[in-house]
Length: 68
Image (tube, rainbow, N blue to C red):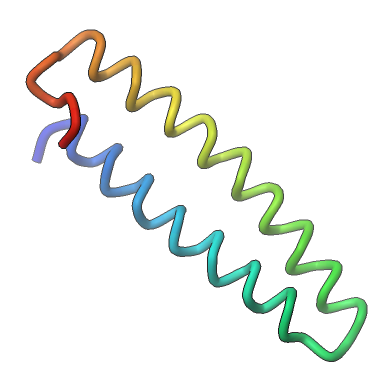
């Protein structure tokens, strides 16, 4: 597996984790748990943003990965 494929797979996984954390934040009954899930989702969103930037860089450097 290439580096680009690994990064894209990681990005896909991070998106799923972000969605799960957001869902947990919305569905939790305990306020403290909601806050923790929400904060963690925000942290994951920052990681996702960094990975998206890296994917753009990989696509710029290696056009064969564009849109994969």
